[in-house]
Amino acid sequence: MIASLVSVVIPVHNGERFLRRALDSVLAQDYESVEVIVVNDGSTDGSSSILADYPSVQCIEQECRGVAAARNSGITSAPGEFIALLDQDDYWLSSKLRRQVDLLTQNPHSSIVFCRAEFFLEDVSEAPSWVRSEWLEQSQTGYFPSAWLFRSDLYERIGTFDESMTTNSDADWLFRARDMGVDFKFVDEVLLKRCIHNENESRRTELGRTELLRIIRDSVKRKKDTAPK
Image (cartoon, rainbow, N blue to C red; front, top):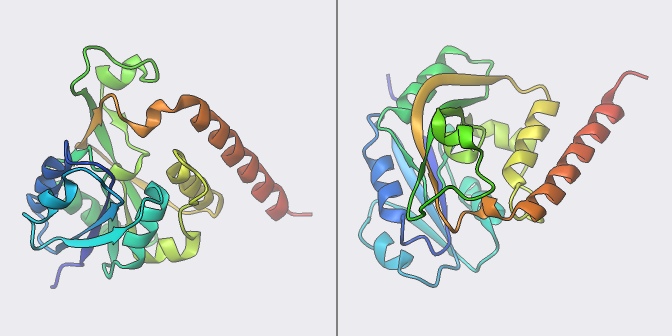
């Protein structure tokens, strides 16, 4: 039986500090049918030089348009039956893809699977104010992209990531999936290491709150529009 191809999409913007670790964690997966697509979103640092050391990695170059646009570009180019997303500063344990593909294969009516994540601090002496203490005390269910694996046809059903959003396009996409009744599955294991540092996009808390309010309003409207009259 031929293993289903997993297309791994990694958006990169000035990611030289972390990129090699992320790429190595994908190439170390014990699931063999994997291709890696890196979308270099207008990096001005040494990211391109690092990518040159990985000839098996497909690289898409584009001007800086943001992480949502980078994910859209990568997924649109991905031929895999399954799509996995990895942020440039996170990394996976070696069984991540295999465990998630196995679960979706066993559940043909499910379209997306999450895993647990352990958060860790890097190059900061204490946790930033936006980080909840429990994130560092125990593993968390990962609802962020590095923890996902989904069927490629789910992207066709849900649509693209909203490129007008700066920090919460992933949350918006999941809300849209949930509102469509998509079945979520979970691997109750730590398969992801999530890096907290001084340049995380999540630090932009005020903008994040504004976008989250918009996401909630849009979700409420969708439910209202589809409710029985």
